[in-house]
Amino acid sequence: MLGARRLFGTNGIRGIVNKELSPELTVEIGCAIGTFFKHGKLIVGHDARTSSPMLAKAVIAGLNATGCEVLFAGMAPTPTLQYAVKSHKVDGAVIITASHNPPEYNGIKVVWSDGIEISREQEMEIENIFFEKKLRYAEWNKIGEVQTLTGIIDEYIEAIKQHVEVANIAKKHYHVVVDAANSVAALTVPKLLRNLGCKVTTINANIDGTFPARPPEPRPENLTELARTVKAVNADMGVAFDGDADRAIFVDETGEIHWGDRTFALIEKYFLIKNPGEKIVTPISSSTMIKDVADTYGGEVV
Image (cartoon, rainbow, N blue to C red; front, side):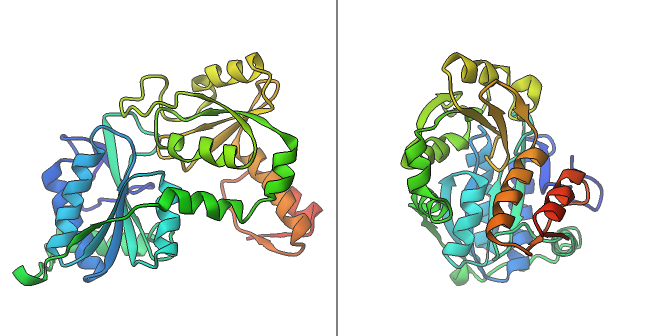
């Protein structure tokens, strides 16, 4: 919920559409973001929520009004858009998404040129521009333009394949059940897994911004269908995503759901075996399991 003198929460700007987050407000926020980026070039994309195309158009109007050029990527997972920022060497991105929130919510996420969300200090700069009305509009003949950005999903999939052992994965013929949450994970994950030689069974893979099958937050109580399906089809594993596909929760072959700390610990172990002595950056809220793995395999937790 938007508060007095503050736009950004812990996960960008969030609010109930047309109550807390209206098109008019979104245009003005777009102007503040555009003023902050100073005539930069930005990617704009969105998740599958019913309100996302509307709010994307609104934020683009604000960005263009301040002279920013926009590459419009349309519907795509948040990680795909973040990767595109770096691969296309643009100044940043604005992503319309409310991640795991219910369908009546939407939000605005701002990404820096490194593909990472902007810092709290940068958020405060945008908030100051917004609340102090320091918006800098472009002259009529310097209004920004919009170009369509295509191909980023295939680029993202190919980039991932460069970081995994494709041949070894293909030899295993894994069977994976994917719960796409009726959202943008359906655009990337099944295709990626099939590219890796996996057999894929999908559930909730029809894109529908009302999230009819389950809430978009991949909590255990929302993943009973995934756990049941993994066992029913004798799959090797299952994976569930949230509304913008930047969070994955895994289910093993027995139907047991594993939280993110355990999943990251496995990745950490794999990484440290190949890269001994490297540093592992993790939030202070992470499980002690992360430090235990680092100590065992010669890493350092930061």
